[in-house]
Length: 424
Ligand code: F3S
Image 1 (cartoon, rainbow, N blue to C red):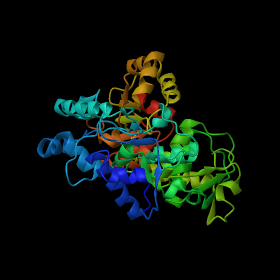
Image 2 (cartoon, rainbow, N blue to C red; image 1 turned 30 degrees about the vertical axis):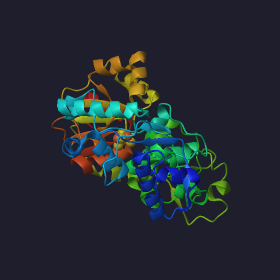
Image 3 (tube, rainbow, N blue to C red; image 1 turned 180 degrees about the vertical axis):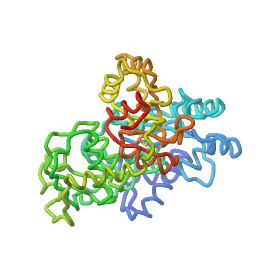
Image 4 (cartoon, protein in one colour; image 1 turned 90 degrees about the vertical axis):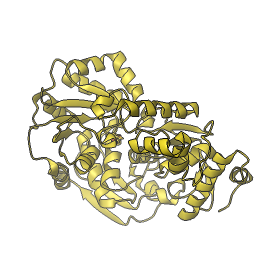
């Protein structure tokens, strides 16, 4: 791999052993990928806090947070000191629990305190504690063409496709190395050719609601897996919640990290632009039958009509979606046998507080949660057997992770289920 003088200096210890370990990791990682060089980045999204019991035990027995960072963030065989400061702008992704509702999450006070120390450490390093899978909703909005190093599949597909930024789906180790060096291997979606569409989807029905977009994304990901689809035949231009649910679904049923919508996304003003002039490998139509089959597939884990838990906010809800939920709930009560948790970034919750939406939701018996989600924290209200969701991604994961039954539908159907205790 070709290294610049600056990169060689970092590798050789000019900036201390922690940066040297980070550069060593990037070189090994880049070589394994077949990258020829590193590319500069000024925008990283990763995770550096230690929120799991396993990491807490590791810290206790192996030498504190330095040991956790060395092992889990830098893959370093020797313990290196915690970095004093990250080199480039870095946002923190979601955590393993909501530190404001630890009892609901089944998290002990001891873990909360350990986590608070680790969050303070990350903040001192200059990591922005956004604590969300949707940093693009709360201030980290990369520019078109900007090279990034991001984790989190739903965020990766959003910034590649909707914003035209450039990232691969990175991991905890590579994002940590990137935040300390401002470099990431130059391969995959950092390059032009892999971004071009390989598979085509022709819409033969209107795709309009959030539910429609979730179903289309789920169907498309299941088909193309990790290839790059281009979709045409769109009607109304989808907004942020629709694109968020579409990408999250496509990256769950498949491994899609990049897609194009002709006339909407920035690298697909035309079909020719999306494909780069190359012939598509295969084209399929998405119509009524495909939509119905996908709906049945996602709802295959639903049997009992009594709903114990309604989870909204996967990916984390926007303020628009919280507003919608508050309007649907106003003047109603969540059923005594059902819990309603709505997940969102802390920054959006503070807006919901100011706008009075939190009060409306809490007066109805629901709750706004932050920093994590049920899949990440592996936590649902005690005794939950049946869940209702408006997210195809969460409907994909929760039954597999927690063995619960799941119903998938619209936000309105989910709020109705929360208030009646039944899936209609
Ligand atoms: Fe976010 Fe959890 Fe969904 S981290 S994308 S809300 S699975």
